[in-house]
Every structure is written in C-alpha cells, then in structure tokens.
Amino acid sequence: MKYRLLGKTQYQVSTVSFGAWAIGGTWGTISDDESLAALHRAVDLGVNFIDTADVYGDGRSERLIARLRQERKEPLIVATKAGRRLNPHTAEGYNRTNLTAFVERSLKNLAVDSLDLVQLHCPPIDVYYRPEVFGVLDDLKTQGKIRHYGVSVERVEEALKAIEFPGVASVQIIYNIFRQRPAGLFFREAQAKNVGILARLPLSSGLLTGKMSLDSKFEADDHRSFNRNGEAFDKGETFSGIDFETALKAVEQLRPLVPNGMTMAQFALKWILTRREVTCVIPGAKRPAQVDDNCAAADQLELPESTLEAIQALYATRIKPLVHDLW
Ligand SMILES: NC(=O)c1ccc[n+]([C@@H]2O[C@H](COP(=O)([O-])OP(=O)(O)OC[C@H]3O[C@@H](n4cnc5c(N)ncnc54)[C@H](OP(=O)(O)O)[C@@H]3O)[C@@H](O)[C@H]2O)c1
Image (tube, rainbow, N blue to C red; front, top):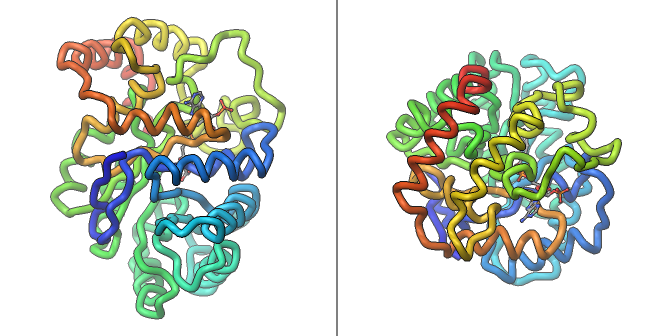
C-alpha cells in the first residue's frame, strides 16, 4: 500500500481506500459477515481510510465500521457525510440544528467522540452561497465534535465554489476513465489550495472491472437496476451517468490496453492514481476478494505513456461528447 497526505488534514491515507456505500445497502443482497470480512481484509492490506455516510443503510454502514474499529487496533480514519437525511433535501435544511443532529447521530453510530472528517453530502448548490453553513462546521470543529470537514459534490462548479471556503479540507467527486472533467481546472485549483481529492465511483459502479455484459442482471434493490435514468438520485451516481450499452462497448475497447499481470479493476484504479492531485480512490467492495484485487492497484507499475494516450483518445471520441459538460 502507498499513502498520500489528505489536503489540509494531517492524515496520511492509503491511496486505495474503501468506499462503504455498498455494505450499507442499495446494491443488492449483502451480508454483514461478508462486509465485515471485506473491511478486515482492507485493514490487513494497509487500508486506513474508509468513506461512509449516515444514510448508507440508514446507519448500517457506519455501525459496521464501528464494529471493525472495536475489532482492530490499527488507527483508522473514517470520513462520513451529512445532509441526505433531509427530506425535502433543501439548502435551508443545512442549518445549525440539523447539522448538529446529524453529527451527533454519526458519533453514536460510529461510537466515537469526534468524527475524523465530515463531508456535506452533495448538497444543493445554494449551500455554497450560504457562508453560515461553513460557520456551523467551523463551530463543530471548535467544539471537538468533528476534526475536519469537506464536501462531496456532483459537479465541477460545486467543487470550485466549495473550495473558496478555507475550512474545506477535501472534495469528493466522481473521477474515473469515464468521467474526466474534474482533471481540468478543478484539479489545478484544489492543488493550489491544498485541498484533498477523494475519487469516487473509481470503477464506474463496477463497469470498469470488465466483468459486465448485456446479460448482467441486477437485483431490484440495486441502484444499477432502479437508478439508470436518475429515478431516485443523480443519474451520474450510477455507471457515471453513461448509457450501459455505450459504456460496455467502451470497456471492450479498453480491454486490450490492460497490461499483462494487471486486472482491469487495477488498471482503472491505477489510471486515477496517475494524477498526483488525487489523494485516494475509494472503490466500493462487498467481498474480501474484491478488496484484494483493488488494493493490489496501489503497488502496480505506472501505466505506459502510450496507454494513457490511448485512454485519452477513447475518452475524447466515445465518452466525452456524452458526459463531459453535464457534471
Ligand atoms: N454522493 C456521494 O457522496 C457518493 C455517491 C456514490 C459513491 N460514494 C462513495 O464512493 C464509493 C465508491 O463508489 P461506488 O461504490 O458507487 O462505485 P465503484 O467503487 O465504482 O463500484 C463499486 C462496486 O463495484 C463492484 N466491485 C468492486 N471491486 C470489484 C472488483 N475488484 N471486481 C469486481 N467487482 C468489483 C462491487 O459491486 P458488485 O460486486 O455488486 O458488482 C462494488 O460495490 C462508495 O462506496 C461511497 O463510499 C459517494
């Protein structure tokens, strides 16, 4: 495993970390025993950073991480999120009373006195025009309830707006072979402001592992079945917002580019980590074998320049026209 400094925090985090949405729910059948085994395997392999949210399985994911922490002595950094419990999900809801209540609930679920990192959970863009929201987060920091705060965003513009607030330590954004716009202006600005970048959907919801086909079936409670067109939440969170068939064709074009000795998942993760502005990737994993595969990406050799160029050419012709300007 390798480690990078997370923005303005003092945290040295594993370049391949752990995304804990799937072990909370909304991804088909899961078993807590298997999820816990996956978390343990991650720690065995040097993962020290876990991304979760209060709404993943309504706290199930946070509570599993609390169990992991009880069972392991290694220091772990846990980033959670707040805001998505709001219904309706409005900018007004991001107020002192609600944010404090969300933080208190996560403290309880995670069984800690202070949260390592709290991220606003893809709030409406108007939140970034309310400096008082960031004032509340500063106060929660002063009170010791949280150590650091950041944001998770859908769009590059939201990321750029968020990092105008000096207290924002990290930005979580979709960045993968199929979603490349963040690497432009945003990466430059984030680096200049010493803001950490957490790359989510690094496998484009599993597509970039190369295991899917037109015959792939997803259970009814898996967002890859019910959110293809953004029926439940932002369309971009499922397969990066790319039509499944189109994405499968692009995956087939990527396949011959994967170097010998590398799996396609490792190739996808390594591609992201080529960018030094990215602190870590946070692939979701439901099973120890997936963790093994993903973590091995950290120590793989750099991808050759010619491969990087071929990926860029594929993105420019097949993917960019479909998604580049949407997020
Ligand atoms: N709004 C937000 O803030 C937000 C939104 C989305 C995600 N996130 C965070 O980002 C993390 C990562 O994103 P994501 O989980 O949506 O997408 P992802 O990491 O691109 O895909 C994860 C899924 O791919 C499959 N997979 C993982 N590793 C594999 C491997 N080596 N081989 C084969 N299949 C593998 C697993 O599902 P199957 O086995 O079922 O295929 C897994 O659940 C989340 O867990 C969450 O922490 C945050």
